[in-house]
Image (cartoon, rainbow, N blue to C red; front, top):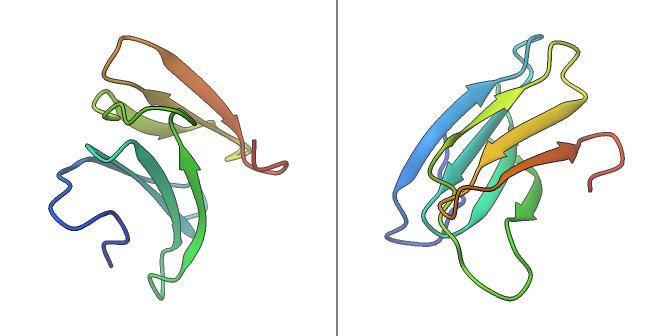
Length: 87
């Protein structure tokens, strides 16, 4: 897996989509990054927060249909991301 997170950011969790086409990683830099599994190409990046850097430390998990991604943030918040709409 190619690391697209900021230099020095510790990756806390990696998950594979259910069709094994996409990986999602979260790190101390507050980013959630989607990569094409076969090539490592970055597909999209979500920021946990717009105004502050909160580590994504609780992990990442795809929904069964791989349309949503759940992330656990360092402040105890769980966010659900819509992967089709990229929000």
